[in-house]
Length: 568
Image (cartoon, rainbow, N blue to C red; front, side, top):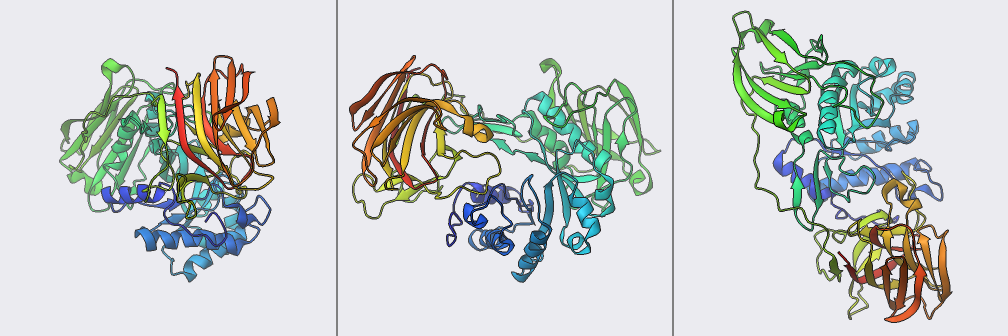
């Protein structure tokens, strides 16, 4: 809901992603968590709890719409990612969910630290009742006493966030076990699922796998995917951890789970300190060395004759194995077995015979972003609301159809936010979408632009843009702006602190103009409708970066016939 009376259940990629996930596993759990909120909910404040009923309505309509338009059942709903929670809002949200017949949707809080949410729950019986799961972010495998005293499920509801190389895989393997052993957490959720964004943005390649070249189709199934398989292929939500879990004598850990129907899965990890450091929090030093570990199956498990064995070894390429099936293990009459363990290994021992290492055809070769790129946005019925390869860093750029314009600007890309959101991170005060190759240095960007706001409106095209994500406010580059008041300017940054040149031009709102920006070496020049407007402006920093489009403020504006040509 970009605006108060606006409901659209076909924006973004998330609906598609959830449906694709359900096709592969119909029992997969779906959760929703707001990072930011549309500005109109705040009534002028950067705060989502000004009108608790309204914010709850906004969240509940999304859950209802997921079911109505996509037949998707949202299982859990959160409060506000890594920001303040409001006790009364949580209660209002529960009441509104129940009123809509959504009793089965559970509430998770507060997706931040263990406190103050745990203490608040212990002091407030109603709050304790309405929260189903306490979710903490990056708990470092530990919880706190208050959280345990609530007797609620404890989850690491965001974790990992580490580069998906072998160290990231080691981090993931260690915390999947130790979040339960040390912190009693029965779920660990990786941020993020797939690294499908420009690698030079913050947290590049911090996904379980990498698919960051839609133009080539190249992707890489990275080690953390196979680390996940050690747990997820041999357990399901609803299985139980056994109490007999813990640390191994010479480093490493083991967990065991059962479905309560006789199946048993044991997961052992011996990740070394050096090869399992997560991005956060600090990991105190520990030592892991070669050892023999003996396990004894007792009670109903003593009858198990045989366990399947899956094995991973991280580290030196010559010794590296990812999720390899070994010969099954036959237990001796006393129900015991002994394993020799080296460092940086993972073993899964299980009664389940359904494990398999899937195969896939070789992905297309990796290729740089094409150095000549065009998009006229002429799509009658777009499958997605946003144009490919553009990465919105502040604001939202959507396909748009001009009913009034039967000519060449019938289909455009439009910036559609008309007020600043209730922000999660430090969004810019301008809207901006980046595209292309971060290594681009010498290039020409050409785009038709249309300012919708009289007098105050303004738009830009840019090159060599060097920052995005949480750092977008400090992005530098070469920015070519035109304004509805009949002025233009060239700046060295998005915020407009560094002004290279300014001037007057025949520009007004509600009229199409073609802007061209050429950057070569230490100089840049700009054309308006094909005629020189400014030239030989000296630009020394940055040396390279993305191309971009955007607006001066949160205002409607349109872009068409985007064209970029970069030198190799």
